[in-house]
Length: 266
Image (cartoon, helix red, strand yellow):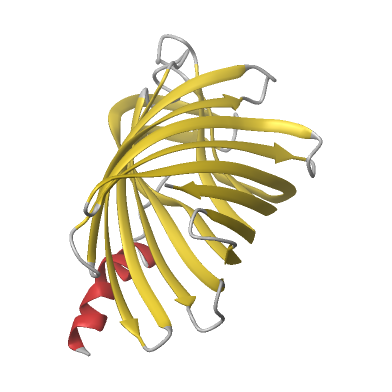
């Protein structure tokens, strides 16, 4: 029983991060609805070793507007029923606020610890990821963003071919742009701006999901789920020279989506 509580410590450490002081304003909460569609091919290479190729499309405004496409390759190793490890790469095409598509390259490594109690399966997964993207202003955005995703998942194996599940996931960013500045209420502007590098760390997303996997055969699985994201993102606006801070805000968003995934195992 003690082992189960120990496994929860990594998740709890990010669910309740230490608050950090920061200048700026917090924006109004904005909500949106979207959808996700994914396909995955899982090839067993050797005992415990799998290669996975995947693709996904994400939509906003229901299914009317594409927002993101991604394709990935992952290699996983299952040591036993308790420990599983993986490394992978994702090519991401994401639309920005100007309606332009921007490529991103993501590399990640993760580890998962699982334990079973009767028909219940519990797991804690930690994923460290590095995302590279081209940025126009390096004082506003980090070219190589480092973050940690921590997920606690529960699934129930007592319904035969259908496995319902639920999880909560928290993402922490470690190296957002950091700065100091003085806000003047008289002029409604910042002064004494200094760029302090990429050292700002804070949690910027909490995700929850409920779903069910339907294993139609040993090779074919369908996944249906409802996903909710709460995002808290830092937005900095500076001049190109990095000598003047125009604005500093924290945007909040609540995204709700439905998803369908298909997995082929061989």
